[in-house]
Amino acid sequence: MSARLPDSAIAPLLNTEQALAQVSQAWDSDIVQRLKDYVEIPAKSPSFDANWAEAGLLEAVVRNTAQWIEAQRMAGLTLEVVRLPGRTPVLFFEVASTRSGAQPSDPTVLMYGHLDKQPEFSGWRADLGPWTPKYEDGRLYGRGSADDGYAAYAAIAAIQALKTQDVAHPRIVGLIETCEESGSYDLMPYIDVLRPRLGDVGLVVCLDSGAGNYDQLWLTNSLRGMASGVLQVEVLTEGVHSGDASGLVPSSFRIMRQVLDRLEDSASGRLLPASFHCEVPPERLAQARATAAILGEELYKRFPWAHYDCGGSSQFTLPTTTDPLQALLNRTWIPTLSVTGADGLPDLKNAGNVLRPYTAFKLSLRLPPLVDAAQAVQQLKTLLEDNAPYQAKVTFEGGGAATGWNAPDTAPWLEQALNAASLAHFGAPCGYIGQGGTIPLMNMLSLGFPKAQMMVCGVLGPKSNAHGPNEFLHVPYAKKLTAAVAQVIAAAP
Image (tube, rainbow, N blue to C red; front, side, top):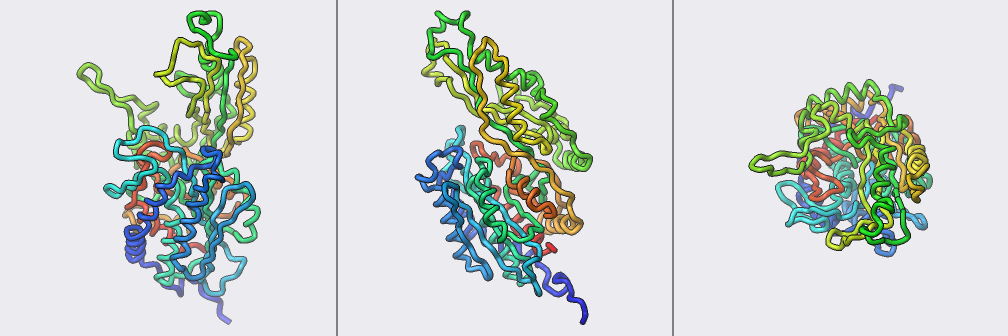
């Protein structure tokens, strides 16, 4: 008997022009409208909606997405909404392999996305809003469509492109969660339940990341981790007249500043504990240099810097660095602190002459990919609480920890497939970029499937402003990304 030829030698190759035309038509005729409907539903992640179960909004977006997938009547597809008691729902689908002689032990492609959203935030353009979708110049504005409501729709459209051309593909499973913006704390119990159905995962396609520009395909090669929590400084049991007490009662805000000085050099922004830093691997440094050469000053110019009129002249707030390489490393491999919320501070219009009893800050600490987040939270608690000035009551309550991720070495087949897909649909080779955000699932999957290749990509390019005001989905880029994903899946071993 002669050996069986590989599918790539006997199956039709993907016609890239036809694939792009098909997915573009699906986006224009159907997907954009479905995402408009999705934007209208304020399906906030559990961390931002304590009554999510009673509100039923996460259930609604899962149900709507599931109904749309089922309506596509894709050959070989089965779908289930999986629910565990007390946990956010997960949408799980399977598409049988169409390769000749396929075996249950063959590698599986796992496609990932999420449907939960960040809260509203302020500062939206007057004609825009988080829950009022607007399609303008190829951009769909509104909360969540780019992060990450589009993922399930793009995944199905990519598979449909393979089906239409009768291109053989491996077994594909989809995992769409509703807890990602809260740190994916519900996800591992579902993975444990679904593990027998996931199979031997050989390729993960994660559609929840970003892009350096809209001119080529981008592969995410690292993700920062995150340690968060609430730091509170309490000095009084109730507010008192500031004229009567100031000078004797220490300001809770001043103590807060002193405590944070243990963590951060306020002049430079550098985090002081050495354990929060790590060396940048040589391969990542080389890729960062190449990416910095491509993106240049766009790395820092893409943000909405404040503009000031100063007596006839104008100026902008300056970035921490204008060196492209350092700018890229600062947002991917350097730990940074952000204060993302505050309590104990009245609105300005209601602020009287009162020395406040306490100040509380929500801290968001972004960590390099190789730093353990759970240990960082414990170190934060010790560092911030010990030896409080004036014996004030200082407490730090950890709010979440997600260790970052450094991609495994890219296999030759995947590198070739990514470049081919990027050249076919963008006319430029694939770029490699680290992301400053966190996708907890990626570290979980790397630990659970250490041999799997990772195609981590997404539509969050310049000015898309995920989590902030005027968030948008760049639809032309999403179309090309959808077609590129189909091409990579067809090349998977």
